[in-house]
Image (tube, rainbow, N blue to C red; front, side, top):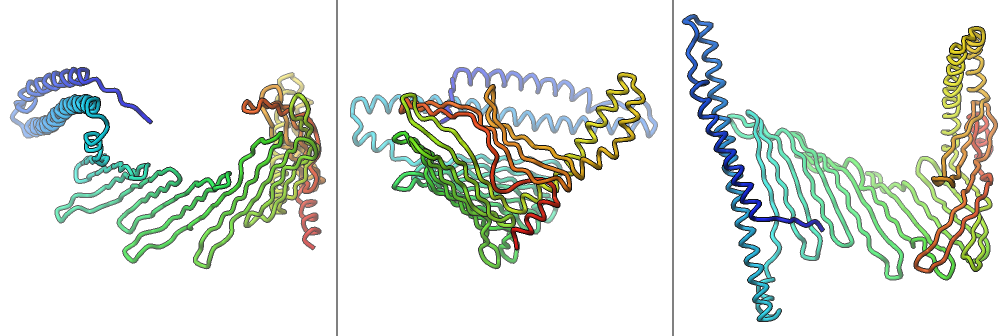
Length: 459
């Protein structure tokens, strides 16, 4: 909750300074008016007269703008003074109410004074630049059950002799309550308004855990009706967070996503995950699911745990990954590009280094052999993409192999760093021992071996 600290004396002092500043500006404008709006022509010819009229016109326009600015300044100062006075009167009323409650208790008097509903906060502004106008509106409405609703919009219009023509508009609203939220926005023009909207809920189930939904979509509002552009897209998630009870870690997650289309709902994805780390025995972390357009996936991480006087000791010993064939093919397509580019960079660096040492023969040899080096890398080269795990002095890694067009397939390798965690609520320590292992299942490499393997598995 944000707090506002206001000192009435400071506000009054500031408004006085602003009023003095405004008086000084008005005096300067008045002094400049006589010297800029009544300039005598330096000669009687037409050019001199035209230039004098031009400067005089600009001076008059400046005086008009100065008058508007002075009026705005005067209104701002009056508003500041009025705000300070209103703040003081409110504080006096609060103090009086405190005294009344002190003598009469929190009975009928308190009930009568607290029955007023919360006020709606609204701000409206308007700006114009010639025939163009910009209007802004913002409001905040407290909700009876808690939370609030905020709206804002802006409209750009062209003022014409026959009326006001709206050129475009943009706006939105957001509502937040204890267990739900919703938001919508739109961008409009003379044809229609594109509306984007989203909402969601988060309600804890009676038995514990979490349950939430998210929906979103887009539509076009026209004179003929509302035309759906996307969605609604619906996502739902349920499960129990990873928790530690009786020296055992456990948790679960389920996720579903669908997209409503004119031909019916289309499933985009579903996924499920479980975690089971007993006090003593085999450990299993598993995830499975499917993504539309890619296919199913399955991942499991295995290990062993034991409990002693120092807490729980855990070590991962292996993993299995069955990735969609499309993912393996994408990695195979990226391999020649990455490895070929790396070969060019390395060869160029070696040529420049040889030239820097004055070894012209070596530089020439490297330069003329670069096409063969590049071709060998693109066709048969092997590299790995390393994803670090952890930070600081204890860092592990996931190494994903990539290769040239005909590079052999290789498994992903994992290096798990040692780690220690202490649960302050139970004063129990979880110690993760370091380990290295290869991931069974899907392997990655050249595009040709990957395609042939996918073809064999599809038969």
